[in-house]
Image (tube, rainbow over all chains, first blue to last red; front, top):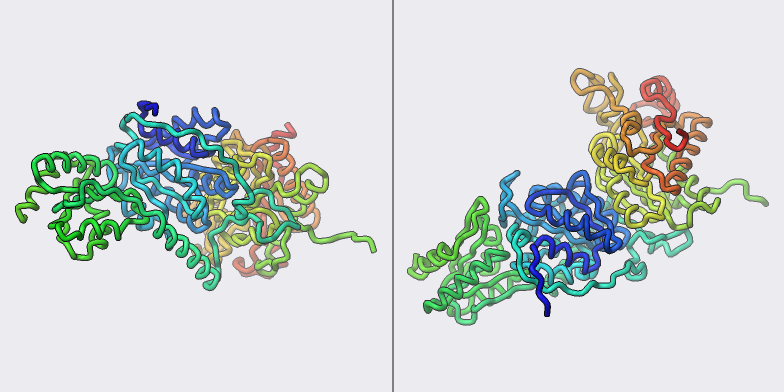
Length: 359
Length: 252
């Protein structure tokens, strides 16, 4: 195994190319600008296309255009830019277009700031755009994990015909870590595998195979049928695609729930407190949609668990899903920061000690 | 018996949903026939064509053009076409957009497609009103023209003078060929078809962004009969939106 020291944004971009992405459409915004910068140099080397769009709105619609031809397409942005993309994301979901969207989250609302944040959890997993749809949404907690998820993201997007969203906080994109970069995947558009795509249909061919990339179903009956089809896909994804990590939870009396970079900080807290004799563990959702409700409930509602603490860099967004999973069976507390301040290990430890004292 | 005329195979058999007297039907046919002729002439490989429909009255154009097609978000057709064309450079890619779609919500996308010299064609149907939503004021609505959101007639002091997209886009360095046409009589219908085919040929030759604006009537929302609407177009629209070539780098 050979390890390379890489910046998160560049490693994620390279992984996308190795996973077969040959089209990147994006717009500069901090803290993800290194992704388009890297793509602008790297795409031409692999015969791919980098195009700087006039806006995030245009970029996601270019994704819609290229994905409709069956190509592997990716776009990246950061929170306010991802807000602009929501229209196009909803259209991609409605038209069942596989693609990958990266959100390198920064502080909000509005312009917020340019530091790392987790404030777009709701936007990512509860909707964002209009209508009944979901995105396969992953929250990596290391650069390596982001690479590993990227290597199957396009396969999942194509399997379910739905967009994949990376909910990565700014720290993942901005830090450097030693990583193992996988080999290049050999990907070519196969019209047989993508009969829905625009791949050169002509009059006389099977009318069912004409590429029609579309999200309008004007009468109530056909929209009902279409939406039922989408929901069946989501049900299948909920069944197959939940990912999570349990860290030292077997005998934990306090289980901390956290995602992304925050979960790494919590891991350190768990180790430190275990060394001092406190039975603390971490439950970390990796897929935040589908959310691992059952696994979280099983872990957090085990008989020896006294309380659950959810830690996030927002006002408690994933907290709602944690509570939905626990359904009042255990007390749940929250510790978080607003304004992109990441909690320190000392702060989290203090909060856990307070909980142990029954506060 | 010898066949002297038949409907192009590049239109489906689905009946148009357009109102009586609407010009979309004529323009759809001109677009489809132009593609068909390029295929017949051996200039375009069969199957290598993609249509991008807008939001507006022609929202269902993807169901009428018998080819691979997209339905784009409102105003975003040039961006969608960009993605498709970059992925399939040998394919003829065109957008079909109305004036609400192109001249209002989609100005950024069309200006920047032109700016990049994107090798796509845009068929821009200008009827000076929002048709699908029931006759609201468009950026192209004439001064004094009554609509459901300008009930006393468009007031220039309040909301500006109508925008001339073809003249504006001709000023963008990346645009290659821009012409304004109309389908108000047989001569102009033939001129429109010639312009559309020329734009498509330029695209096949790898030239830059081409746009054909087609002035069109909306009898329903103008509150006129189809005949009266055609007369209104001739007396009011053509003087403000003069027909002709606005830019043709190929002829320079």
